[in-house]
Length: 450
Ligand code: PLP
Image (cartoon, rainbow, N blue to C red; front, side, top):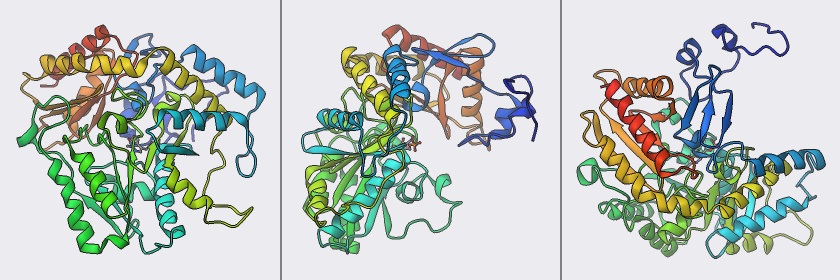
């Protein structure tokens, strides 16, 4: 290992970057030409060479209130100085209860109980474990099968990659969880290319759940987990009517429906939760990211009263009802950050701002990009867009990677790429002029890599 003097910032010596094994990253390419970020405020990041970078991705779909917002910063500082940590196993601290109540009050009717984790991945594992344990305590322990969806992303835990459907995230890791099935994904370019919002085609794909249930027997199926809008695979808005159909089929067969709203919650689609945008109430919602606007790690699950009460009624007096949790479930700093963030969303009307921006956002995406030769499809939903570009022959992902580099260095803009899709999901604090600037910059980038 290379040893650095205390206080040395290893910005100019790429070999000093060796120790950090970066997640989901091309480590060698990054370390040869680092895209380093050293500060942030509102809708911008700052680089060591003094550039302001427009944040087209809200960090990793998480900084929905923008960056380093004063009320959030102050809440974290105050909390750190007054109660740094207290256990939530058999003890409690008031702000955890306050945040849980606040989240429940924003959630759809009937989703009243919040279990805290520290990330989306932990939230997903929590929801899957609750689903299995719920059936067990209800006397239906034969319901052990979990159903995800092709192209789904549910984080990086063993539970999440088992129900997830992104091939590279699964194929290196052996057998994964047994008893998992997958619904087909909902993308069909021939039916929906260049659609704004949810495509008309595809609701019938939910009916595949009936086939899976018929194959295994309903009494073996615990839960279905889907992202209402699949984000990480490249932005797939749900076909109109699809989620309602999933709800009908799961309810009919006593199967729990879990929405993984790690990306879609907290205003990304113009409502607190995607469940509200689509008028479909699942049995559990997984959240993370936007809950603290990315400032302090936090995730969790919002469960129905029926699920919570099932556990409360099952265990003897004074006994633990659910054997699950994390040291940092309901961490005081995360709770302080969450409460302050939810206040910013409310006080600044940021969910409403996202809803108001949506039409202009979709129009801008199409008017700037649709005519470019390398653009094969554009999908939009809330303030999210996925833009598929033509891969370089024989070099999948290379053109998208080049676009990310060009956007960062030449357009002063952060974009996210997944495969040969570019995903944009800016903070909800964007104004129309920021949206315009972002798509204009992306257009120049796509021209540069054409
Ligand atoms: N679920 C969904 C839908 C996500 O988009 C993500 C992250 O992008 C996760 C789960 C995992 O969250 P984390 O990276 O916080 O573990």
